[in-house]
Amino acid sequence: VNSNKHPSSTPAHPLCTCKPSCLPFIIIILATMALFTTLQRTTQVASRSLPRLIAKAGAARGMATEKQIFNQIQSSKNIQKITGSMKMVSAAKLKGDETRLALAKPFNEWTNALCGEAVSLEEPETVTYEELPQKTLIVPITSDKGLCGGVNSFISRNVRDAVGKITAQGKECDIVVVGDKGRAQMTRAVPTNIVRTVTEVVAPGNFTLCAAIASEVAAAGTDYDAVMIVYNSYVNAAVYKQYYKVIKPFAGEGEDEPLVEYEFEPDGKSEILDDLYEYMLTSQLYYCFMDGAAAEQSSRMTAMENATKNAGEMIDSLTLQYNRARQARITTELIEIISGASALED
Image 1: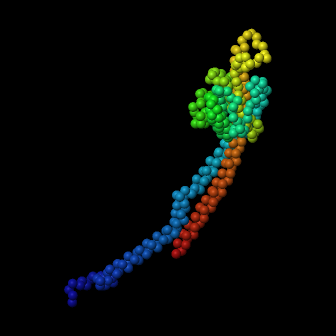
Image 2: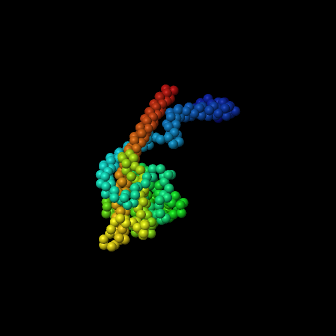
Image 3: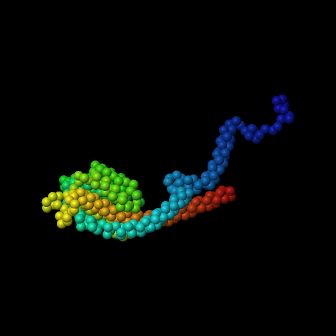
């Protein structure tokens, strides 16, 4: 009889009856079963989360989410409303500018007999500017506001071309820019030729304003042989063209004496001719302002119409993209539900 065995002790676990050499195998079997259970649970969780992770990965790669596309659609709709309103405002302003231009045309007809007709810049490569004298002051008429198509760009381009051709002929030229947009563009193109700028011009212009600008131009152009005004000419609501007109002061003696067919009383012809030159310059500037204002409004109306049309096309494209993203989200959610149900059945 073994005296160490207590009669009231509990029976030993069956594994305890195994030999010590079997314990490593038993531990390996238990660890393998635990690892298999963990892998099975992880696989089920991954199968349910895989579609959501794929969607997140797509968004991280740069694909627009449903919310982002919706915000872009709303922004495009707001822009479409703004451009549509600006188109209607430009159409209303264009009617007034057409009326003022019709009144200004006969008011300026008399200047054609003294300084000639305006020259078209429709084909700039054919214009040589050979008729200009040795020293010329260029006055481009531009606008202070943008969003009006190529109104200001065409003027700046023609002025840059004129400066290059005049300089190549060995002549001199300076620029007095009217308008903030023209100043910004020509400062980059021909900065050394700009001597004065006129900005923040009140629209629509009037004769008093043009007289003040003409005084500034005359003050800056006392040493110049001619003043060349470059401006946009209104044709209709869809077409405008560029012209330039050369105005020369009344100076000369003998055969070059101006207005010899007229008699001046009292004897102060030089003073009268100076006043007439300034008045002619004011009248021409006023006509160019009216012509350029009508061209600006017509170009802005066309530009806003095109912008409204482009915004509508963008809204249609974004709506299609939004519907595709929404359909993909719904499909992903259905896949998640089916995958979860299949995992529960297993």
